[in-house]
Image 1 (cartoon, one colour):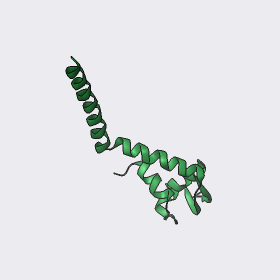
Image 2 (image 1 turned 45 degrees about the horizontal axis):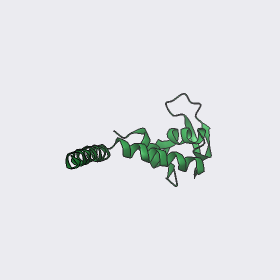
Image 3 (image 1 turned 90 degrees about the horizontal axis):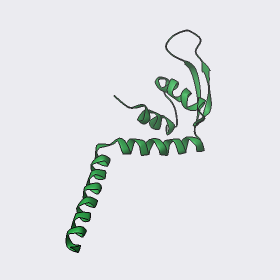
Image 4 (image 1 turned 90 degrees about the vertical axis):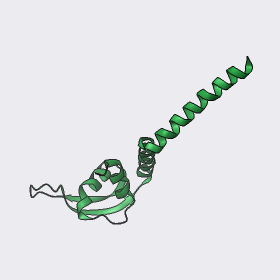
Length: 102
């Protein structure tokens, strides 16, 4: 299952939006992360958007995309392992300094 963060990132950098992504694109437009317009679907189905005019990401959206990429990176296993190794290395160096200075 894809996370909402990766889905938003994918959509923000698409030049053209497929109909299956209209609802997420609508959310990005409503929040001001992308430029465009849409026509709401009034048929009562699950679909919220009937048509979408996607103009792409804007400056606010680029900042949002950078924040999402950082959050995704910090949630990754390799990032957590790296942070643990840095912490353990600092602990080990502190122990060596204390031991050698005595």
